[in-house]
Image (cartoon, rainbow, N blue to C red; front, side, top):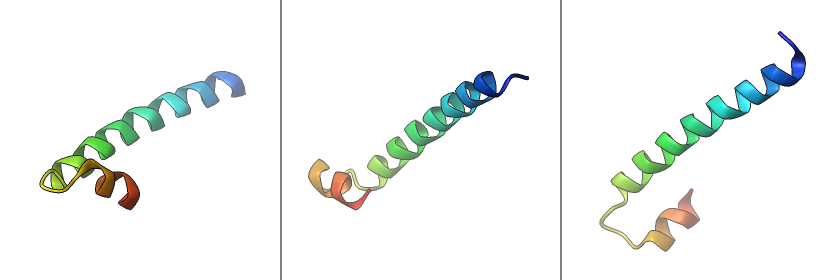
Length: 41
C-alpha cells in the first residue's frame, strides 16, 4: 500500500476512534457544564 494511502486510512481511523471517545467522555460528564468537559479533555 502506498504511504500516502496508509496515512489517510490511519487518520480516518483515528478520527473515528476519537469521535467515539469524545462522546463517551461527554456521557460521563453529562451532569456538568460542557465547558468543564471541554477543559478536562
